[in-house]
Image (tube, rainbow, N blue to C red):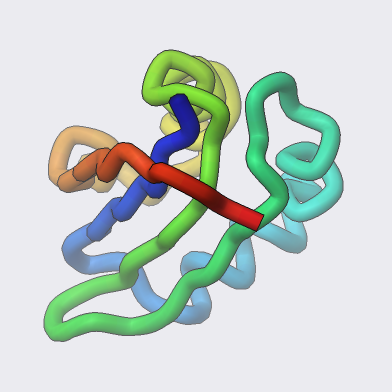
Length: 92
């Protein structure tokens, strides 16, 4: 079942986010990554940054995070990232 992933990264800034995207080509990578559901949105929250994405499953997202995202995060940010999954009835 599809999930909406919500991640909050304390201490991350717009500059950090933009740097990750520019330096690693994450926008291009996510589009072709297995299990990505075609939706990504991100923006600031108090004390950090948040991201919303749709994935085919929680496992597909966790694979993306471990293989691509964690190695690009600022030092210590990966451990502080708060991720929540919400099951979806429909997405489109």
